[in-house]
Length: 256
Image (cartoon, rainbow, N blue to C red; front, side, top):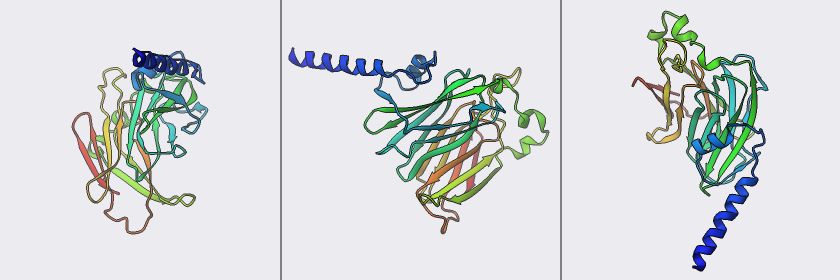
C-alpha cells in the first residue's frame, strides 16, 4: 500500500511539473503536437536547443532552418522537428551517432506563420524542447515544385547530388553539405501526387550509419542538407557515403 502511495505521489508531482511548463510561444497546437511527437514522456523547454530560422519567410517554399543541440550534455538518441500549423507538421527526425556533432541544417516549406519545434531526446529519457516562431505569408506547402513542373529534364537528373566539405575552425571537425535534385512534392498541390525523399543515411567506410534522417513532405525541393562531424579534412576520399531513398523506392548513393 505504501509503495502504491509513493508511486501515486511521484506521478502527481511529475504531472504538476509538466503543467507548469507553459509553451513560450503560446501556440494553440502545442498540446496536440506534443502528444503526437513525444507522447506523455517527461519534457522541458530548454534554451540550449537552438531553432535558428529567419523572423519572416520571404520564400515560403525555401525556409532555411538549423537545429543546434551541441550545448546538451550526454548522448542524444534522436531529434524530432515539426511546425505546429503546417498541414503536414513533421519536417524531419534526426538520429545522430555519438561521433556526429548534433547540428543539422536544411530548408523547408511553411504554409502560414507557425511555431517551429525541435524536441531532443537524451539517454536520460527526458525531451528537451527548443522553439522559435516563424512569420510567413504562407502557401509553401500547397505550391507545386518548380523542379517537377517547370523543368522538362528533371527526370534525367533525379537524384543528382553535389557535395562539399568545410573545416569547422572554431570547434574542430568538418561540415558536409550536399544538394540533391528531387521535386519533394507534398501531395497537397492539385493533381500532383506526393513524391519526396524519405530517408538519408550518412555511412562511414565500414558501412556504419553515422547520421540518419527521416524526412517528410515539407522539406524543400532540391534539398540542401548539412551535417557536422567530429573529424578533419585529411584523407576524406571515399571515407563517407551518402545513401537516400524516396517514397517511390528510388535509391541514390554518393561518395562525399
